[in-house]
Length: 611
Image (cartoon, rainbow, N blue to C red):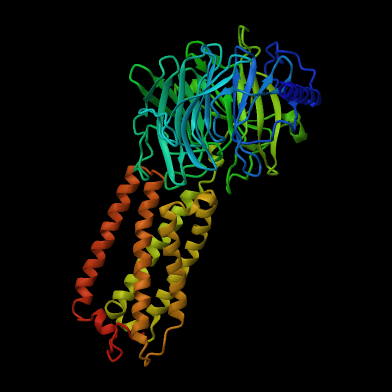
């Protein structure tokens, strides 16, 4: 009994120390009480070391208790967490919660949502040191009686659900918490293990407890798809996403590694769940802003549309742009999309800087990855004038993982229209250069060496100018391929570059064309017995490089989901190339009677190898 009393006293004193040590700002509740037009400002409201700095956690708004619920994530050294904290808007402090029930495993990169009416939080999936998770949990949010309950799992559990979504991490979804909150919890996209990137979408009815797969048209896509007119987002993870309403969410960017698209990518989508059809209906935004993944997104305060039953505009912030996006995105830049206008086809991206903070980056959270961002609509208040934005945690551009919290107030953020024409399409330039080298230069110079010297250039053969034309053209092709390869590495996240089959073939073909000119430069003398064997290796390295290059161009066209007409034109081009090669072979090579077997015989002398 004494031990229990002492332990209880220790816990109470520890919490008092934590509360006392936290900086309590003099911010009114709610922090914004009147609509202030175009004004917007960041305010840091909490810095604490008792709540471990973390990234890829979830933060949700417990509306009825007027608090945030912070769960899980991972620390800077990769330690996965399962602790539970709240942020009280009344007391302006973090409070650790020690829930009852089962012990939920540590995790990061999971999906969480709140059932406002039922006072519950749901958690699905994620990952930890044991791998990808596929379990589904419920947390009672009754203050003082918080309790974890495992609903079901498809991995490492005796509690199973036949219709539970497949395990994943880095997906997006959740539920809408606002004045018109609903009862649907969404799970979409994500990644399982290292290479299995997903594009399916699921809806969980928090009232009936039933899961339903609602993957939209063209949603279950393979690795390669012809045509850009897909009707659902291609497989991806690390996507910036936010709920806009009970049945709506918006996404932007993400990583489609493994041949499923760019990493990071730059497309945005609006999803509406059609309950009658039981299907997610996606609307694609114009591809415009810089590439990004693992950033944040929230509804833009002040844009709640009563007719649409959702917010009209999402706000995208931060994230990592990869090698071509300048690393971590700017402190003060927002990417705002007017989804209300998008329904009429007149939507525009706007890129906005909070001018008063441009020269004071310490007054903003800065561009981060793995942070949490959500809009708060204070419970019991009518109207939108009190909506504001919360920002918590994540990793900053100095690779420091944080546990600070910020408010962003101001309901209208205006900015200049974003000029889409200013973006450089590195992948397109890469494709054009590779087509010039592997699709034109190398095949033409190969046919010149194969057929030309014995047929339509006999007069030039004595001084071998065809050989110099062949050699210089191939060197030029190599010079074109080098920047094309550099652009390929720059255009995708390097961590995922080698997970793409297109990259494997490209590197092998590139190695062949780089090696062959060197091999050609060290050819043996004409009278050497090794001359014929050397020529045989030289010929087949060149042929393999061209074959791999032509195949890889097609894979690249499929991977970027180019228009069907581009795919069709390339197929016609390949067919013409094959026809021309066969015709030249029948016209010029059939008469010679040469064979590979003879070529390997050192005593065999033929003009074909006499160069």
